[in-house]
Image (cartoon, rainbow, N blue to C red; front, side, top):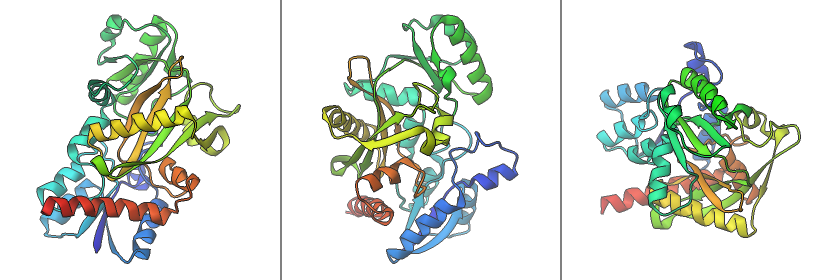
Length: 328
């Protein structure tokens, strides 16, 4: 097949003046090279398309592909991850990973939590602070945990994200509102074990790739999987497969959330335990990072003995299965 690849490169946005944190979700060139190499080894021809604006121009110019491998995150707004799939849907070009609806819903973490809660799945009680005055209406018991409502890669999460009283809540919400220009998600703090669950497939065909527990080392910022801890993952975080009863519960919750949110092909669901050890949904990652060494999904695959090439092959197979079903 001729497979186009849509992506956002950190280097491109850095040249436009965006800083390191603003571009944290975007890819380095070595990720694109790794995906290309895997696709070539599977017998496919690849075509680098780039970001949504480049895709729009190519589509208007008449370019088409048998499939697009989409990892474009986008830059602005709650629909930023949905833009590339929406363009491809418009021109009826098939692509990997989730559709515009799933990507928009899961990017907005409060909306994703509402959908999951309506499924009857556990997620921590929460509120949304859209303006600083909303802080006065938050009635959740302390301690709390706050983060931007629509960011990934732990952006906006630091040691200051654990909130112990109203003055801290007001101060830190004000900081996040100013820094990230979006609402703040306020949740009851979950003090227990944290896991990320890898999923392969779509709907009833989706399965759990594995459950990876994330344990903070002594060198890490305590208690929270923060932006800095994620940035220095090898030094600060210990990752291991979780196959005990709690790990199995995490897998069950994650698979139900994945299906309920309508996510496709491959990705991750993050969960964390409360004080009683019960697993709670944190957030969904339907456009999970695919750096062959540093990203969580490939790391989880390696822990399960699954080579990077096989992971990419599984993603393509899931997408083609969907395409075949929609054509009948």
